[in-house]
Length: 427
Image (cartoon, rainbow, N blue to C red; front, top):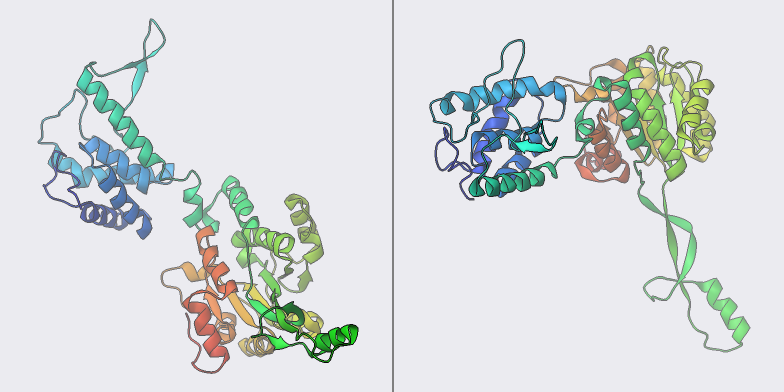
């Protein structure tokens, strides 16, 4: 890999992009700025594709890749000044503007101006460059603008919504995430149906009835042998969402996900708190606002207590044993907090386990660093789950979608537990 900062004043020579990216991302994470590991890889790629020529260009490259919210700027500026500002202060500036951003003051943090910052001419009203015009400087400015546009193209406008917990989003951001969740495609695994279709391959099963019917129509002694194979179809998808008070910061997004699954994948949707309510008909409307309004009206126990065992018993008795849960993928959205005895939750989960093909439990509390499934209801239900995911953010919902499809190590481990080959565990 080529040197990243060989022309950057104040930095040691022969520092690779990966090393610089890893060190700086580690520094801002220790300072309290949440940054995912994939952003460190993208920063290394950006520094490799566009090696910075000064600290100001390095600043803007790091800021565009690592900062996703306006509230993160003061902390990012402070860390950048602490890491690079001290060494660059002794270097003479190469332009009329300062080459390094000044350290932020406690009350009013300051940041360097953008590389193409301009001011309007008071006479013509046209933008005028602050720097002295020269052919070399104009070509360098054009190159800086092209490099900066290439880096900006790597960042999505709504990227900061993907990794943020639903409980930390504002009202407007919740609306955006709800639209994204409603558009998410959920697909269940394929299974063989009882129905068959004609196949031209001799590797399929011989269709005796079709062969006899063809022989009777033709009247020949040596009829053409016909083959058939069983059709494939998607397994049913059943979604059970906890809308009690403890799940209120997340249930708004989860119900939007239910609405998209009902209208897009033909799923069956239920919500529960102190009692179970079926919302498949209410959420089947095309208008998401009308669908959610009808769902809120149909569930009077919204944001109340939680009775997981009673709601599971009602579901199995009234819907599951009648065919709705047989061979289906059942997804439970709940934090596991319940009033009942954990043994009751375990008994109802065991009944559901005997009916369903796979059980996926989505608990947004799992995203906490020190989380352990020690709550009575969650600890009792976990041995009967094939996958245990967080689903606390839009990015985490992708892990839930993979568990529904049967992809990933979590789903594989759950299938082995279902066959009795290994014991259940927290993950």
